[in-house]
Amino acid sequence: VLDVIVNKDQRGRKAVEYLIHFQ
Image (tube, rainbow, N blue to C red):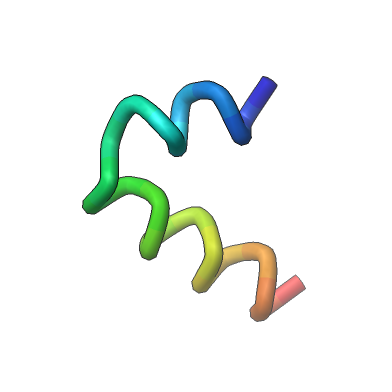
């Protein structure tokens, strides 16, 4: 689900990737 939202927002994608990396 998060992947879909991230795909819609390219900028959000970097933010999500950063959070995932932090996790």
